[in-house]
Length: 118
Image (cartoon, rainbow, N blue to C red; front, top):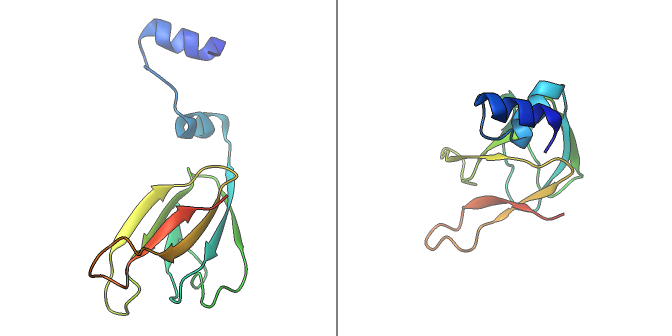
């Protein structure tokens, strides 16, 4: 445990500094890669900013992002036009992620999920 954490915990101000809070305090950033391995264009937002265009289909290259506000991704998990179902995740620094068909959802062949692949 760092000296700063000892001080904060000793004062009873915080129980634990999590990774995201630590990055915010130190001005840190996260870098990660997003791929699209579905047959759909997937729209998504990173830290509240819409990605330029889509994670396009067919897969046309890696999108490497640098996030300065926590690395929160919000994406449309339904591949159909006219339907929107948002999911939100906090991406890990250095992670490689891929949009893939979610075959475990029975009765919805349009379901998309974001998986950590590296």
